[in-house]
Length: 110
Length: 117
Image 1: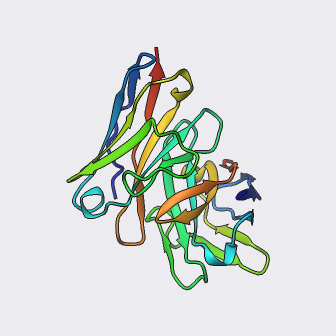
Image 2: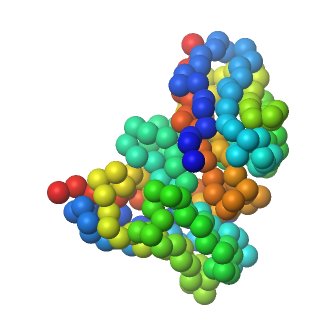
């Protein structure tokens, strides 16, 4: 199972909206809405920010939103803030009791 | 509050074995599927293994199938990962996580495993 494809890096200015894409195949994202997104700060454990492609866990800012279409999932961060600077990973359940992550995207807030 | 705490990491030679533990609290451990994931130095995340709440269903990534064994003790609220035939490429921070709706809902702080001669 190959990793999902994410851009290596993205950047934006405070207040802007920004979207991170996550591309898979018919065997993962295309077969399941069970896409999740994680935020990770350097040296820290990842944190779940979206599940089921677009659902936010309790306590996660509504500035984070997600969508899925065909073999691609997207994470949108609105009203970009300095604290959003982190690594972001997508993950898809494949429907065969296995999961596949994306390679990660480093977000820089300029 | 959900808490997960990994332990058991360390330095091991190639071909060696190691067992990681993950102590869970703050939720009904016996009712939750659990996962292991890992992250090699400066690399991305990789799913390793998953076990159903009662241990009846287990799955592994291709990279560890046949070498790693996931298990759990619901009476003690502890998750395990027994690792054999370790390779240099298994060097990583290993995280345990609670599975909720097929997402890694909560994560431990991680335990570093270094495979080197």
